[in-house]
Amino acid sequence: MALPEIRLLQAAIALAEELNFSRAAERLHLTQPALSKQIFELEAQLGFRLFERNHQIVDLTAAGRAFVEEAREAVLHIERAVMAAKAVFNGADEVLNVGKSAYTDPFLVSTLLSVRLPLFPGMRVKFWSNYSNELAHQVIAGTLDLAITTGVPDNPKLSVLKLADNPFYIAMSLDDELAAHRELHMEDLHNRNWILLGRHANAHLYDLIQLVASDQGVCSSDIHQVMTPEEVPELLLEHGGLAFLPPNAAWRIARDGITIRPLAEDRLRLVTNLAVRSDSRSRLVNEFVKATARKLSSVGQTAQRKLPLTE
Image (cartoon, rainbow, N blue to C red; front, side, top):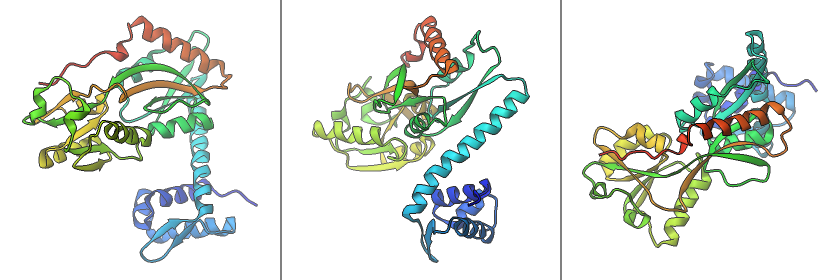
């Protein structure tokens, strides 16, 4: 059987993520009929349906879910192959593929970019963005060499170097009564509207917030889920809510009537690691991790610096 073209894989991935032909077609810069034709062509090549659809609903079949999960990895490998070839063509001898999330502290990114390896003078670092749990999966799958992850549980398939250990920050309006505190505890948040980054972003942290609250007899009056920190200010000001955010995300919105305070809960720490496969035998990867550890040590673990309070 001939393997499907990458354009067909990309069509299936987009439709699986959007579950809507119009939105998926717009994302791929195609017309809706053109996308439908590509999906039909792919299913004809495979000999089975990837999607169940009618005029209102698009959903993945069981076979479709399995196919799209592997198709994502295949497309990532192809993208890496292209980037690696371009880097070599432009003079880089080795390309290190490193994952990060949108909320990664820019200091950590610049630290990794500043690492130099005498044994690999032509090394180039290429960053790829995703949610932390997905980054961990990609490292295990081998589509990334390393990843900066936050809030990912221990996994025997990963070895990690701790980069930072920070509290959650609670964002609120400046006139909120809790703004008078220098730090907050979970009990202070009882019976308030909570704003959380969606569970899909990091299921472990989302569930841990609920667990710690439940153990202390604390509950919210309502929960709003958001995709990005930029959605938070309107909810804070309109509903008088409290948003749980990573430090870097909290500082992005701490202005125009919004202030932030650290959440002093030992069980709710945001541990950021540099993760690599436990069985990695790559000399480049291992040397890079060692050099990163030395770099952080030389700057006095600035990555774990304390952030000043916003007044």
